[in-house]
Image 1: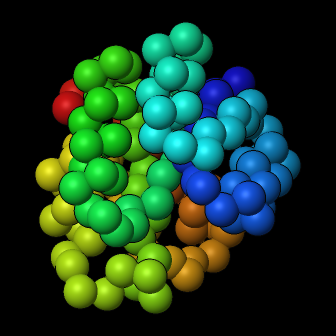
Image 2 (image 1 turned 135 degrees about the horizontal axis):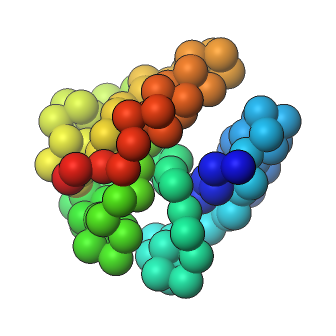
Length: 127
C-alpha cells in the first residue's frame, strides 16, 4: 500500500483529500505546514506528496526542493488553484520546485486518482 502525505494548511481541504485517498486504498498522513511535511518525509517512507502551489510561490518552490533533498525518490503532485493563484505560470513554478506533475483545480476526483496512479507507476522520481 502506497503512503501519501497531504500538505495543506486548510483543514477542510486536507480532510477532503485524505478522504478521497483513503477510500482509494492509500495510507495517508497529513501535514499542515512545510516544516511538518519535511519532518514526516525524513521520518517515514512516503511515496507521494500532494501539495498546493500557492503564494508566496518561493515558499512552495523551496518546500518542494527541501522534500526532494530529504527524500529524493518521493513523488510530488502540485495542485494549482487558478482561483487562488492567477498571475503566475503555475506549471513553470512547479517545475522549478521539482514537481512531477501539476493538476489544475478545480478538477475531478477521477482525474486526481488517475494522476496519482500514473505517478506511482512511473517509479521513484529521477529529480
